[in-house]
Amino acid sequence: MEMFEAIFGNIANLDIKQVAMWLIGGLLIYLAIKKDMEPALLLPMGFGAILVNLPMSGAITQVIDSVKEIGVIDILFDSGIANELFPLLLFIGIGAMIDFGPLLANPKLMLFGAAAQFGIFITLFFAVLLGFDIKDAASIAIIGAADGPTSIFVATHFDSQYIGPIIVAAYSYMALVPIIQPPVVKLLTTKKERLIRMKYTNVSVTKRTRILFPIFVTIIAGIMSPRSVALVGFLMFGNLIRECGVLNSLSETAQNALANLITLLLGITVAARMTADAFLSLKTLMILGLGLFAFIFDTAGGVMFAKFLNLFLKKGNKINPMIGAAGISAFPMSARVIHKMGLKEDNQNFLLMHAVGVNVSGQIASVIAGGMILNYFG
Amino acid sequence: MVTGMVGIFTVTVVIILCIKLLNKITGKPSKKDTDTAEGGNA
Image (tube, rainbow over all chains, first blue to last red; front, side):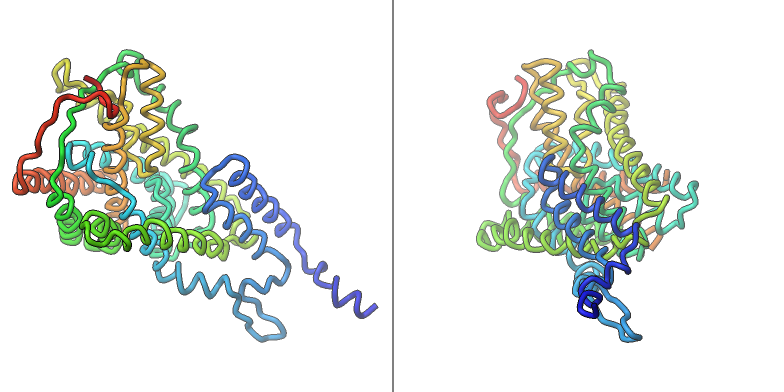
């Protein structure tokens, strides 16, 4: 009998909320495997959600007989996320993956990246109206950056208690770009606008420009938005490694081994903030709703800005407003979605290169937006 | 909200000017023929 109790006694510590978190964890794993939604992040997060919600889980810190036993997930969280290390290291890998060529050839495209951050600021406003503390509201709003590491960085910097739901929302919506963006774009554009063809001139960019660009952007961001310099700097450091031409093996390591290793640890470590008590609340639903709102208004911001510019452009130089929607950070998914939408309207309308230029500008703009948020409220 | 958007557009415009300056300093990029093969419209 005593042996039976020793083996099964822990079942008495099981809470219905923990079972609910197992189901949420299972759902994340299902979406990762069956629907291919950001599997590198959602699968570890889903498994982590189950791991930390087992009764008296040894993976997270527990107090047993007045003795505090530190769990490994909490150790990882303190050493990788609480000090903002993981998202920054991930940025080196992301920077090494990005080719800023299309943007350097047509720098005006950066304006769309800026316009598509509109959702962040309007969501911040509504999150405060809904009763969130300003720092939590800022952390929630940054979901609209469509940039997972930036979301983690900002939420961690503000020590937001909602980091779990924020990251789940950020990565889920990034994977849902092909579902979220097309209806918003269609709603805001006419058939005639979607049929606009844009000329593409293949302009080559010198290697020197490619090398100097990350250095210049870091200096500009550092001067104008000093809080963003860690984010921008690590992103641009990765890009400099890629473009310098003498560190190919480091560039490959950053793009593959480093990015994979950090992603592997990031997902399961985030689960430290997915305990039933912290996750299951009305606020989580509100955060998911606000995140979707931010994504929709980011898309709308980019499209409406293109329509606004068209008011001043001559016939023949008009911009297809759909490319404005690619100004979010979800790269290259958003550019592909817009390209496909263009082809659907007219199978000879190739918007890919324009959309890619806007999309990489969204990468930079979202990081700068994160830095601005830190500057204003940090 | 307005301050945020003004801030991000200001930084963006400075970066655009910087790219234009870089392109000017490092040599004029050679313009190739209008291309459709790589995904552009003629």
